[in-house]
Length: 338
Ligand SMILES: [Zn+2]
Ligand SMILES: [Zn+2]
Image 1 (tube, rainbow, N blue to C red):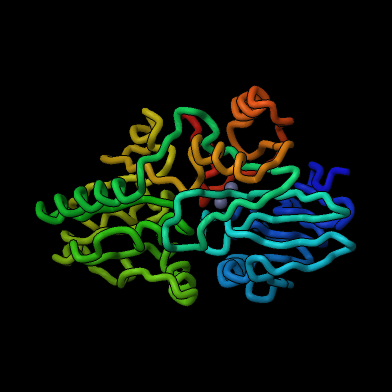
Image 2 (image 1 turned 90 degrees about the horizontal axis):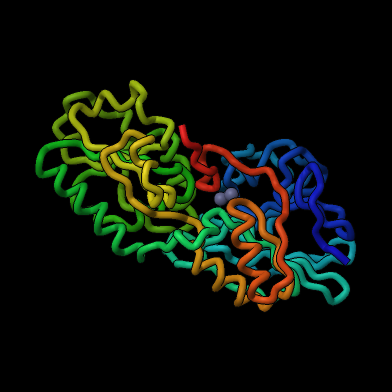
């Protein structure tokens, strides 16, 4: 029996009568993480991981009807055992494990296999059927270790500070921004954040994640000499707006897995691109799939066909799964050529 099927509202569990990350309002939802393309408004009940509670409430409203589970904690719903397991993607991100009449299915949500210190590290979960994301599901995607990327960011910032120029780094406000703050060398200069980033920093700090001191960029006047040594963290939407004018002379950069594609940096119109992703690269996807021991793999959320073909060649029962995702604050959004 299929424990998860695709329905117009989203991934649906027939015996449990609930949806995973539904994109239309439903009665019962199980949420893998709080990115906007997975956690949407309007569901009557939400089930999420305990570490995701702060972000879910800050984004969907303090009064949503939310029940939470610690990682590994199991509840029984209509005979379906449900539990969350770390996905290593953003704070609170979880894979959803379902067990029913001896069958085990795991829906990965978005995941990343390199641990980064801002959320619980990815843990493979044994299952019969694995539903994997495939945002970067092409062999060309191979990430450098994040320590090397942070060195590149530090070197760029240091150089700009020496030349008395602000460093504006665009990245997704939830997850990527905090990972960068956690990973960079905060001794280089002051760190300023855009108004979209700071509320999320607060939730991370409350969750016990170390982030260096940050200042709200809006508090600084144009021509403040501090700005010339500062790193400014802002969402992509702030780029090209009047918001950046206050920083005077600056260098700008974008941090995303998509920076691996030639042309993306140019389209974004920034000086530098740093290849830093919160999703698994091709070797990471293959490793994660292997670790599950699953014979059946459903591929969704990205470059589906190449990964499906590859897995079939390895003798697995693989197929694509149609889903609707995409929103500004998640890297899952495929860069569109313009
Ligand atoms: Zn995500
Ligand atoms: Zn996503």
